[in-house]
Length: 634
Picture 1 (cartoon, one colour):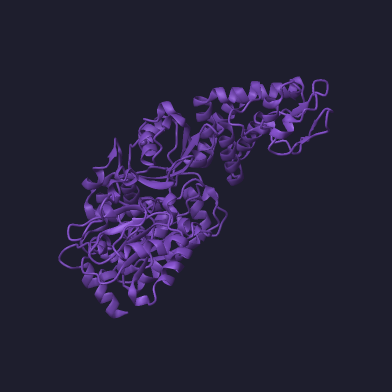
Picture 2: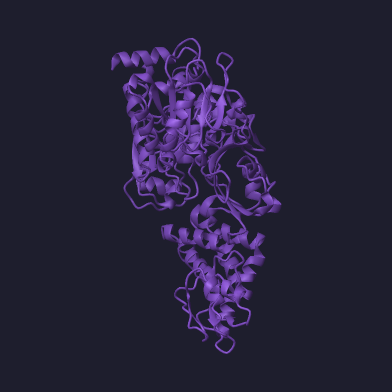
């Protein structure tokens, strides 16, 4: 143990900060095979791929297999990169177990397999490049990014402290804790203008200084890795792919505010992320990076991983703190702010995992370098979780102030005219229509547009998506996740859900009262939403109506079609109408039954047919097929 600590110390405190890159090593004698293994790639079959790679070789000493994190492109899972002696690293996408032999047979014999398997290569002057293979950095999905956090993802082994150290890991913390005072580190972060990446967008440096200047001895530093937004997966990517980067950011933050105890708050079903964070925590302890008298500085810092229940409201810092204290996760009024009175009544800083992951980069590269990216008062980069009707599902690291248009094109969505909208910010976010795809995604512009960036979820919707249905999903999510403490959020979200259900379904009774309730729906949605924004206790309730209000603002005609015409162009809200057969007009030809995809039409030859309502999916194909106007829609 002592020798390990000495080795780590000597390595971190060499005269220069050195960052080695194993994939540039021209002296290797055996193949290095890098396999991305994260939750996403495991679902895609990464474990089977690894099994067949091991099976290919007769002896383990013939190759080196390295498990890595993800480069963030989930559509390419499982991604395998191979480095053989004398050649540049070559990367393959969608490597399933049944093509492992084909790829290895080719590459190990310096032959390229079929082009559709190849993603790209990482060239180096000292290594022979593969002919006619594009550079990985020239692919649009990578070239348009500004990678600071994700730069070495897909190369670093998340299960290895040694791997992180090879890429300059813990240099920032080691030099910070021994050569800089806490206030100096706080000022560097303040100068960088780093803001909270979880949605609040508070200046991180100001928050740290506030906690540091309280003068109390007992303080806490908390990393919020819960990622409660169902449409965001960037936080999990950070924890699974580079856990030591998260640990280093936490240690630096804890030292900067004078905290001896830090926590990682993460939802209990993030099994792989928890496993890797635990391993990183234990490795860093054994190496003397965490614990007592770190690097002989006299500073003690310990980190504990706390598994939360996965409640959305625990993304709010006071609710998270309550959960850590063993209480029900419910927000508390501010002030006092957590930096004054937080966990156990002591000064506490809560930062999002993405915010924390930026800290090592800022200390190592400088605040000016960090500010070179960004726009307006929003510096640095932002991770966006792109999903939905997109060509490529991925996590992108883009400069703050990028546009939806640029994100869409980076994900190969060339025909943006076919995209109906983009929904950003998860349940608390809102819709951006195509005419606003050039809007800047920085905090000032987003706030002025009455939107919410949140953790950076970016949901792409095409013409087959219904704005009301998406809004209904998110408000139902909010209603289920509301802690119930304040009436505006608890009751308001329930009423909004009831109104949206009424609008997207056929009236129970075909009378004037039911019709009037539907017609009043839009006005009621706006009134209740406004009340919730003004009177809810925390951000969950205040931002809950964002999807509805932005939908009404940009897609009001879609609401009116649902209300007045009982029509859903996307054919999602199928309960708006009911189909019947007019027995007087039906000639019993059977054409409608042949077109019905759900076998919902009862046929009696040459007699009037009958539609079984329980089977009918309201697709309207029977109405289109009938030449005798025998299908009635009510």
